Image 1 (cartoon, rainbow, N blue to C red):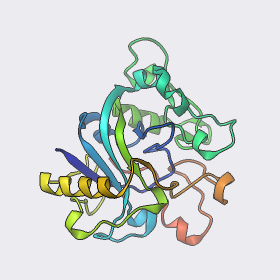
Image 2: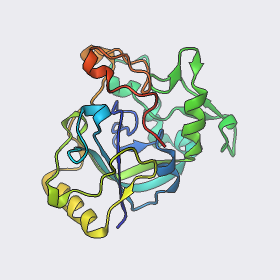
Image 3: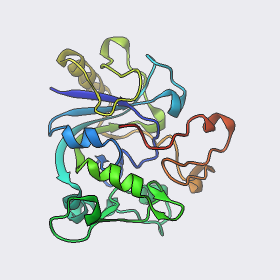
Length: 238
């Protein structure tokens, strides 16, 4: 069993995206998306930037088992994930949070110049498509799709010390690997206490839910000074 943990600086329902019947990681974290394998477990934890949780007290935002790994082009073209394409004209933030934002311009699309970035509220600049995000996102090459997931969002849970996996002190582009005993204790703990699926909303929702004005996952406009400290220039580091 391979189990990797990282800390999130953003949790908007975009990366990961827990909507549409499954959890997907299609943007941000390019090293994780490129190198993790089917069968791997991936866990996202809170951070000081996101929730003010200090080192050693991080809470679990989500846990997923990778059941499928598709290229970005195949993800876009797969009918099962059509509802992950952002639908900006629909009411409800889950429709706007879609992570299926890269439309291939032709067969065999692989390089960044082979894709069009669709308008979305997370990776989008003032003037239109965000070339920075496009280049970074597509460097990950793949989309990870869960066949089992537990998403807690703003209801992130504290894990007892004896079942905590290895959590990096800071940002970890590739994720921190736990030993197998740690991994099994953590997975067994979650499986015996929670049903797979969503157990909470994201930490940050768009304005039409709770008054926040969210410009992008890297350019959220805070509503108060406390939130200002949680804003960074990207969804997370490499």
